[in-house]
Length: 150
Image 1 (tube, helix red, strand yellow):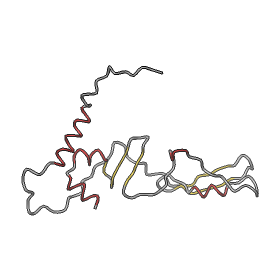
Image 2 (image 1 turned 90 degrees about the vertical axis):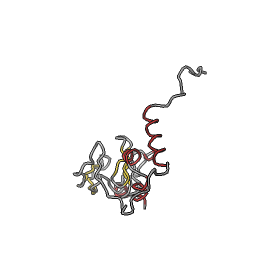
Image 3 (image 1 turned 30 degrees about the vertical axis):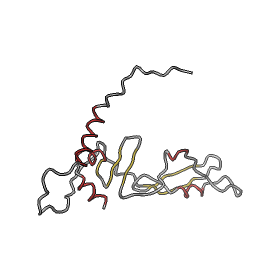
Image 4 (image 1 turned 60 degrees about the horizontal axis):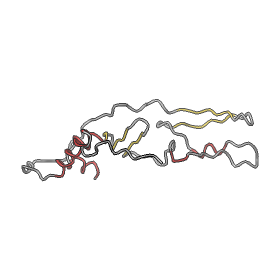
């Protein structure tokens, strides 16, 4: 069994973590001044993540089953997804119940369609209502985030 390395100092957090804690503390602190009486609904501002989503994903996917030589076509949505039950049509014979998907850990499965959030773990993208989550955490007020949630 290996020896535990205690030479690293864990007493000071990374600068990014300190910055985020400062942002959270500022959000939770009571306001120094009362907000103006004319404070209305929060305006939506346009913020984009580092990478834009592709817009040309819709189309048709052709699949050739080399076991039988049959060709199949399935629709690809504007989000780049196919309906998994379309693969059930691909079978090797009358006793075969069709292709089943095996995706351990849901690494490449979209179990739901959401208009509220977008997650791409490979690219490190997490958006809530179109806003990158880091923008909401670091640059938005508590009231702005509460407005988006409601």
